[in-house]
Image 1 (cartoon, rainbow, N blue to C red):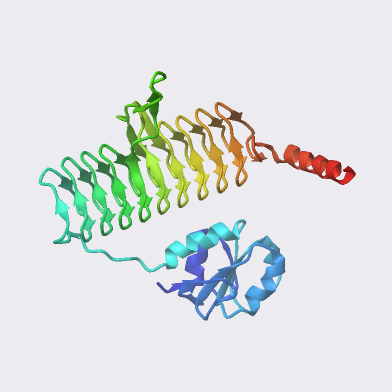
Image 2: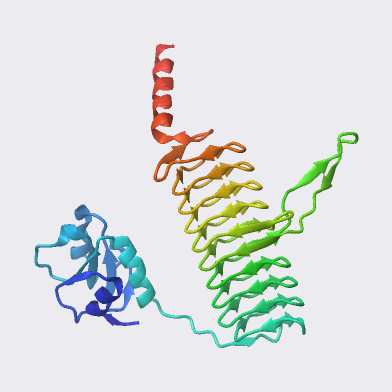
Length: 330
């Protein structure tokens, strides 16, 4: 997807310094860049390496203004974001012709738009899949599932009955959506556990991305909901009745217990454990391996929380320093 530097600058809303007619054909890291590639730098100390690389153009911050360079520079307030947007412009589009592979099993009661269905896909009665959606090999779509437009389900995704996916949802290989939650009632006389009803639904809103081998449970009696634009990494588990807001980012191996609430714009690091009925309020940041106890409320937009139980990182670091001083005294 060859583009002139000027076209890219306009697309990412960057200011161009240098020759706008230089042709860019791809993206790369500074270390691996070849002729035709676009690279980016976040800070001034890496600018010289980018200029000395084989890349044809560089995205940089305002620190790169005021000088003449040997190659075009695209000046952006957020070079990383501009580079991400440029990648969409330069990335070759995968062309998939609508159709159903002969090995797929599609129930006569399912409704399909103009979609791409790969090998060995199973689509159950009452399912509806809208235009532009692709189902990779081995996907299983349960009864009465609804999948919106332009979704991408990579191979071996399983979607349990009644689940709803809105538009432009991406689900990576091996993910399981809408499975039963982990809910049991214990008979105090016998000590045995009996399964609590898991008859709710899972609803996933527009532009959500879910990583490989992630699992998102259906609600027990209500709805598990994933808000618009949320990004969930590989091997994350979302329990029943959980509500996740918009533009949330959740890193790998995090677990959210039943009925936890994560509000908008929260950032959750890897291996975080969130107990049942906890609430993470708007814009909070949970560092890796943090632990949130049951019914705990984490509040503080832009504040980083760390440790178990999680507390503001300044408090956590002070406690570590005190422990270190006590250890030296022994």
